[in-house]
Image 1: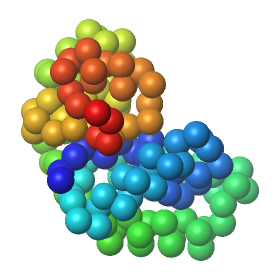
Image 2: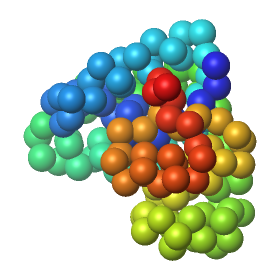
Image 3: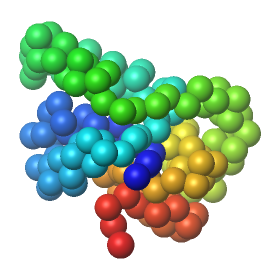
Length: 141
């Protein structure tokens, strides 16, 4: 199965202590990638890099741990959609306005809608917006 992967899920593979309630969902999503594929918007790597640098600066993780996570992430069956920039001032902006989301979160919603794929996310506001917009949440009936 193919789905859109939100950084909120992927980052729990790296720092599960930030959201203990989401660990089982994040692990199930990671396991799904053994046979399936995820799609991410081009900004996903920037979001992950931003979180990594903040965690390292705070001393929560060491660079070696970050390198292991980056290697894991790079080795997964994850395709980067390169049209994020093209959609930014159009559909993404409209979705952010409509659902009161950050432009970053609206990017994942737009990608799910455009590709007709379920969304794997742990973000509450993004989940609500996706359901309202008719987007399936990955792993949820």
